Length: 356
Image (cartoon, rainbow, N blue to C red; front, side, top):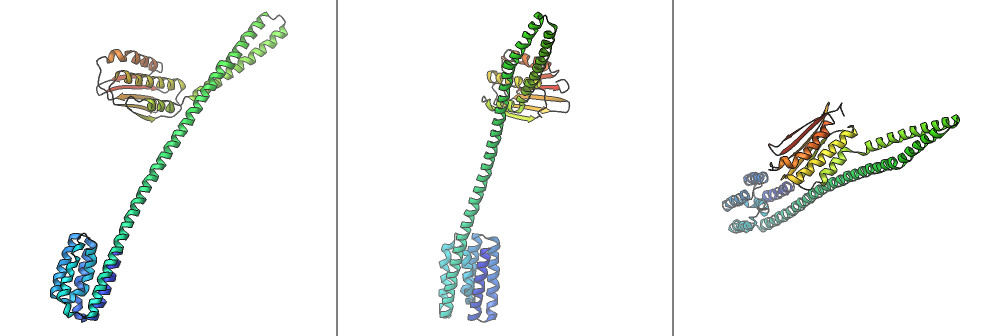
């Protein structure tokens, strides 16, 4: 946009000068040629085209002096290219027609040329600054996006850590209640049973029976609360995510498409199977990538563990015990397990929802 304004100013200034120094009828042709050439330069913006038009217009100036008054406009185009060192050649047409030019014409031409150089310099500097600004803006935008991504990742990790710490604390509380309070209540119930056996008075036996029933109800309530705490404390995604993050033998990927309504027994089974499979990969596989996939379907759950390792000679012996344990665990959920090793090692497990 700046170059269009600069060229327009130069064309207007040179045209006025041209009309003052020569007859208007003789100025029309140079003006039309100059407007055409400067429009071509503006549209294509090619350095080689600018130098060719510069030389072509210079040849016209050698034969038609009227074209000299608009020559600075083409010099403006040339000042913005790598061929700017050719601009002194423009002196040749001026020297040839020097005797035909008045002092005013020479002064105006020199001033117009100086203005063309100054405008081109300022426009070039503005373009450089604009390019630097855009480059820095894009760099800062990219950095901002990266920082936002890092912050979101840190916040997500922080939430995961808080969730994991909360679940661990629930487990600790559940264990303490089970080991301490549960043990005390169990001992109290047993002691009450012994007292009821030796008590002779009916009213005392009745009171002890009521107390035993109350303690038994409290014991059952505590057991239910402990089980609920333990169920809530096992976050399947967090547990599997931690196993994947801690697996450093090779690259590991987790694909998780589940909700958190799976029964506690199934969650423990899945975690145990994944641990066993990753342990076997470390011991017996030459894989470079492992993928653990968990899917929930309307009627069943699926677990797929696959790697790209090649079959080992001692695979059957090495994997036998671990695979047998997996089969027994899945059998308890009324599920199926298929193992293939045609393209890497792959464990496919599925079990129905209604049986877990």
